[in-house]
Amino acid sequence: MDFYQEIKEKFCQLIKGDDVWSSRINVVNIRPLTPQEAIGNPERDDFPLLRGKEVMMQADFKGSRGQAFTDMPGNYSGTLREVFEMPLVNNFQRAIFTASINAVLRYFKFISKTVHCKDKEPTECADHLKDYIKERFGQPRIAFIGLQPAMIAALRHNFEIRVVDLDVDNIGERKAGVLVESVSKTKDILSWGDIVLATGTTVVNDTLTPLLIEKPVIFYGVTISGIAYLMGYEQYCFCSH
Figure 1 (tube, rainbow, N blue to C red):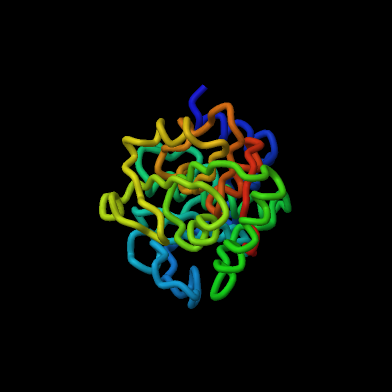
Figure 2: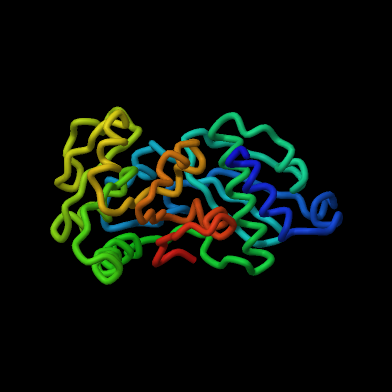
């Protein structure tokens, strides 16, 4: 079964009733957030969100907010049914789909962490992550997918870590003291690592499924909150709201 079709079916098993899917009162409104709206004034200035590499999209479903990172932002308004009938062929459409799932599952109280942390919280989240990893796995080698500089900075002093990122501007550069490798190295890095720590944004850019290997996989960030709940994935998002 197609990955996104499986997500849709699991969601539909939870969310029933024509009034939820079709009524105009249940319109999902989505807009991009400014960096300050999304992350406030963090202690670091090298987050992709602050550099214009990513934008946070926010869905609103009857007052409940759900967010998702994307590199293809835009505005959208439609019923939940229209969201689910939309073809998921680019990052804009997948961001709408993902943020909408987060907002709706939050409204129905299946999940609670769907809004990105702000200000000092990204650093606090990163500091807690190293303890979380150590308690769960001891001293694993970490295959880190995506660029989250605060997390990388916190982990590099405690664990062996290799990082891969899609952004060609980062390839071959040292970020937070760690060399960023090309996506062509992904299989090698996954094989090398004892655990995989991957950005939840992989669900938006359609690069998630190759990461589902026979090793512990932890997805970080609010983007994947709803889909992690539906699919049973482990998620780390310590300071989200």
